[in-house]
Length: 495
Image (cartoon, rainbow, N blue to C red):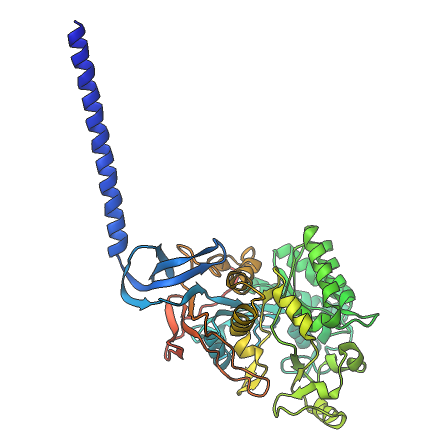
């Protein structure tokens, strides 16, 4: 009896062991099969052996990336097979950079953006008055991804009959809007949001006659629609009343009162010597739950139209500069009282050498401040920030001065801009990071030689060291040369 029980028990044990071995063997075989499938899958493009850096996951290691269509389909430390394989040995592979403040929205500017590592260039400060027309003009014709806000300034210009072509020259600057005009402005802003605008743009300094109630009303619309206000504040510098700090308090208060999301543009060229106090205001507001962010570019000069309200009486005191600190973009000459008066009547772009070096450095190295170019190149003329902002960060501030780590810089140039938009613009959840399923907007650069070449005298100079750039899985830069005949950029709009 006991012997029979022992035999039956032993048999059951052997049967269970056999089943376990069978299941385990099957699992192992399936695992091997999956790995083999992954390694043999013919991806469209494989980026092989690069130093992959992802600011979201903090991945910083050699990896192979497989791209299928416009998406990242594999990230592997094992070999991958692709129809096209790119040797990325010795290069950093990073997410495509995102410029939230790019005025140059044409092929000339997109070429400079691509060579500077930017795969998404957005016009979020000035914006446009006509969202459908703006997007239609670029659909299928853009080297990089593009998008715009519905802009309070261009809307106000249209409603009030201003004669300016880009920024206000007359009727939108000082006059206060009537009740009827205010209603028209609100309606046009709402129609722009309905048409897919990715926020509301403000340039309050260009329309100083605008009542605070008018701005507050538009912030309420932004809050109701869950959109961000991208805002050039009302004034500059440290002179009271009308300081940069006072102007930032206005829009931070509007955000707090309405619940709107706020992004303050180019904090350094607004704050100037008062920038540390402005940053204390922004940081304090963030700690208390107000959704406010800001940006800066890595230069000590700004640029705008000489005919605008920025240069109304008192500009020397506000900006802390004189005529000789202005540089006429068309010729590169420094201005005098005589040439200032002449060019102000003519109208045109002027570079403003007004930002102290220590202030520019303070903002660039602040952990939560994004990098945005505020760039514009027209016919080879403009500001070097339009061509070299991002390579300048990687070359000067990361490699040469070690003021930022490479991962910190990529976070400020790729991830933070994507996160600023992704709550209201779901498309941005797949940008600014390297992960499975993310958009294949990628850059490959040599950290030992990446550098900007654009100068104030010769701004239309391509950056160097950014070897390859992919937009939606298509090469737009290969071996530091633009790829002709391809326009893979897509519209970034609220879905």
